[in-house]
Amino acid sequence: MSAGELSEYGRDGIMGWRRPKPTMADKVVLVVGGGGREHALCMELKQSSHVRELHCAPGNAGTSFLATNHPVAATDIDGLIHLASILDADLVVAGPEAPLCAALADCLESIGIPCFGPIAKLANLEGSKLHAKQVMRDANVPTAAFHVLSDGSDIEAALDDFAGNPWVVKRDVLAGGKGVVVTQDRNEARAFIQHSIQSDGQVLLEDFLPGEEASMLVIMDGSGFVCLPASQDHKRAYDGDEGPNTGGMGAYCPAPVVTDTVRQKTIDTIIKPMHNYLLSTGTPYRGVLYVGLMIPKSGEPNVVEFNVRFGDPECQITLPLIKTDVFELLEAASNDRLAELQVEFHDFFAATVVLAAEGYPESPVKGRLIHGVTQEFIQSAETTAWVNHAGTGFDSNGNLISTGGRVLSCSASGPSLEESVRLAYELIESIELDGSHYRKDIAFRAL
Image (cartoon, rainbow, N blue to C red; front, side, top):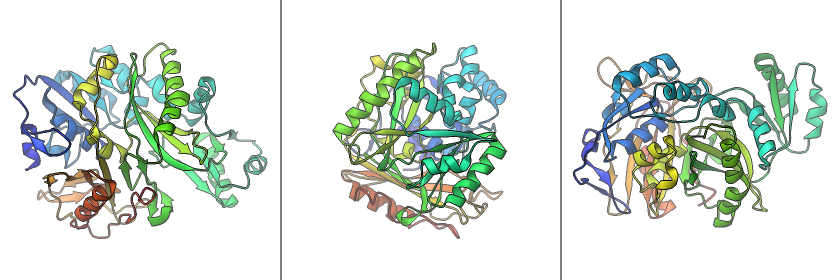
């Protein structure tokens, strides 16, 4: 099945694909962004029985098979507003955080177009680490102790306060998921603190939280919230969690570390208090709240960070587990009707492995040819495997090339985590990109 035929198919049952029943698809949707997350969103929205036209700005090679790409940058708010207007969009889905922090949702609201994504004031949960910490304090949400350091602060005393564990240093700006250093090297911590103060004015030094990380994506609006299955990302570049931090080298879902007990504690101590707090601000939070969790041996979850958008690559393996029409879910949350929707999930596992360009994350090499990528879903009776495009494009001859650091990811779903991981690796091993690399141990904690 080619990607161009996706509009004729929809997911049904536990696995597999079918032609949907005839529908009155009449909705126009614009997805903002051009990475793996946005390709995953387009894949799901293309299958909706409601979507007549799907557009993406700026998109990538993969989204071009599913949607009409438009050369408008995700940071070009005026351009996006103009595009949404001329398309007469029924819904805009914001992929990355930058346009939300730059008031995309506010501007769309002013012209009567629903946006899946919070207004700028609420998007500041990701825009400022300090703001997020202050909100957590006000909402009584568990998180690590911290110092705010600026010019004139006693850096050595602050480092002493959190000595004995790795130091956690976070820039107080949007940094594309790469503004955090976790190190046991005091000199490295000090240097990053000094550099961040010089470039940003201030920086956060946090107490280290021991435990295992996991992510929970929570769809929210003024009427309620829906927790998606918990996932686990792999941030370090190399096997065994070695090497520099990245935007994410792979993920799997559901994550066994989030047991039923941990999940309920997360809802009771984090999700409900945050939902109530955000409601109290006057404008509902309409979108997805990414809750980065640290789960210690005690099972009492703490918040590592909040993001105001789907995680990448968590999005690629969480959305396929949603049985409910994804357009219905996103559209309901954009209009404060989430409580009216009965959201259902598939009872299976999913995993994704990221193929990164040579030199990623420091200096990725771009423009190289990619061979072996299929637009088809590779299926058996119980499993499905597919490619999610991220940093991909076409050269002047129409050949698929790399355009970013994280080039694509190979994803699979199945009745067990082991099978999903095996299929994802089978798929990635069939793709050729000179100098590329990927981790060989995705889901090692669970397996």
